[in-house]
Image (cartoon, rainbow, N blue to C red; front, side, top):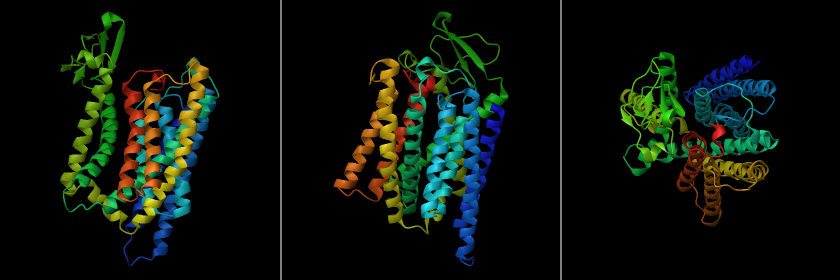
Amino acid sequence: MQEASGYLLTIAFALYLVATLFFGASIRQKKAVAIKNSAKVANIGFVITIIGCISQITSFILRWIVGGYAPVSNMYEFTTFFGLMFIIAFIILFFIYRLSVIGMFTLPLVVLMIGFASMFSRDITPLAPSLKSNFLQIHVMLSALGQGILAVSFVIAIIYLVKVVDQNIKSKKTFWLEAVLFTLFVTAGFIIATLSFTTAGRYAAVFQIDNGEKYIEYRMPIILGPTDGVLVSETGSDSFIETPSFIGDVVDSNKINTFIWSFIFGAILYILVRLITRKRFAAILQPFTKNIRADLLDEICYRSVLIGYPIFTLGALIFGMIWAQIAWGSFWSWDPKEVWALVSWLFYSSFLHLRLSRNWQGEKSAWLVIVGFGLIIFNLVFVNFLLAGLHSYAG
């Protein structure tokens, strides 16, 4: 049943890729082609997306049956579920607005999410004692739903900026928009690097640290190695640079090493795209946004935040604090994930305040939404991946 769950997720992954092509084709139809045919192509993409979503939901249910608990307790499970909530939010949005461009931008991000999640362990393991609670489903799943809806607002904000930012001149706007899009290449770089080096195998290395009390396993060539680490495996090699002790005491050097390789592979991929097209990536995407109104995008983006914000508040903060009291005897522990969830919530609260009281619309609003979702991703990836805390089991 666990294998079937994995196959169904792979099928969903493939279907989302195919649906992306249909959404893209519906946008790029020539003028000679009737609008009706364009709508038909988009509807085919929508149907394929729904089938992929059903496949992913079935995968989730099968994994729940096998494990006996909601599969949202580690990085692989939560990220795939986050992707599922992202897709469901998109399906509802497309059903209302019928905008193909949203599908063409959303589905590749979900594909990247699933690919990213698949690089982590897929094993079903017993829950930590603190996780054995019905609040696992309530807190984590509501948080993911809220974040999935906020992810849609992020996509709309990207589409808005791709449309309105002038790509014919170099400016701060083009730089920062390109920087945001570059993070997608780094995510792809993580997937490519992990697959490449794991398949090769010979780069795997195990280091002994803290006088043999701990071991760190590397799966990629070691650029940044552990402080005072001793290589104890037959494969792999000594580190090129030792992690400074003030960093190594806080962050696992293996994870820093992984980020370095992800950045290298992502940069290579980005440079190749730029060399082939001789355009900024945003300029490549801009033609797909030509036939959609900027004011409509701004309105959809704002409404998405209005819906996602209270769900995120309820799931991530309120139910999270209740569960923390039950599990750890305290509503608040200043754990890194708690802190960054609060920072994210405060930022979105400020966004709504500025939107309502100062009428911040258009570009200002879009940039704020991107920063807000950046905080959510920082909490999901960087805080969860690099910093130790009460939520460390979720990595």
